Image (tube, rainbow, N blue to C red; front, top):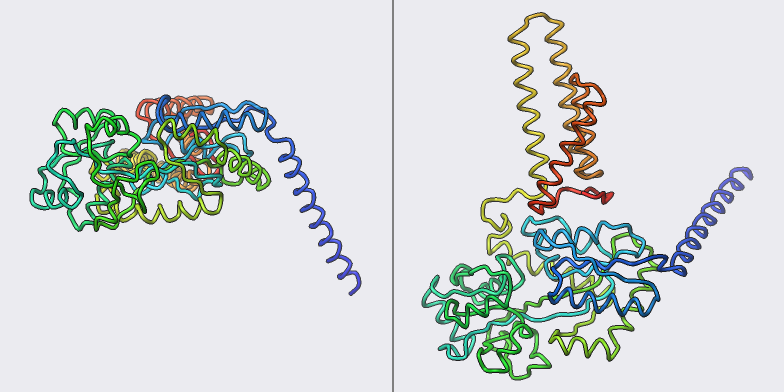
Length: 450
């Protein structure tokens, strides 16, 4: 009995030592952080608002830590490429993502499968409510008047502010839904952003624009445009004269936000260290002056509060995306999402394999030959099942390479030929889909390159 007790105590002691060793290793990593250049991934183009905010935070963190913090713009896929790059980076704190509003909607629209749960949230740094903007000579003076006109003339008024399915399009859709109007009662004309939309508005080609107030600050100051409503909980501090949609009888809030996050699994010590420094920077006069200069609203939420906010956003936009029909894909043609190509390959292999098997059976009645053909087909089917399972864990690249190489070899090719064929096919697919079309292929839980 005493030997059993001694054994249990020894095991417990070893476990405690292992835990202490792991804690000591993580603490050492935090003390030495950062050990090299830190990458701040911006999912949008250089020169835009998110890029400007990303570069401010890179400079500020570099000043705090004394190591280079470099902004890298990973654009494409309606923000999916950049968000994937930061979510699936090595979770050691040396890659920080500037995540944006689109994270709450991309997975709903089948652009990617990423959600806030794929990140360790650091800090929400910004939020700007959407607004309904019209020309100063427009006939509508209030949001209610505009909505009444929409109700009286469904499908006649035209508006824009961003691409189809973008933040401001969804804000507009949610507003109409809250006002109990069909979402298609206003024609949405897709544009690359607020700036070209405003040009169309001023030229009389649009009736309204939905975007943030800072994006129309100069036109508002020169009295070229009028803001009918901002979709905020309360009036904006910098624009106290602009009424909210809520106070005008339409209970709807929509904000575009930005925040900093780390890949899931980053050691808590590094998360806490970065979060503390970010809170310090957010409270600085330098940050307030930067945001005032660019007209961005400041909304600060720390780790747990930011995570809770993103969970609320995820639920809020679910109903809007579904009501707008974007849950079937932005093209309206049931876009199958990132797993489309793998499934096409699977179906193609089944069809080709079945045809070859049937042809071989017709051509030669010898039992041994038929058995041989059946064995080959069985190998392909087993490989297909393994391929689908492996893709979830290894991602498209590794699983596809292994699948093509093994099946080609088992079907009669030499090993070097099968390996070469798999490599060539993989490169062609990557160049075509990831580079040319900017389609995000499945990456698996290991976060491999593509």
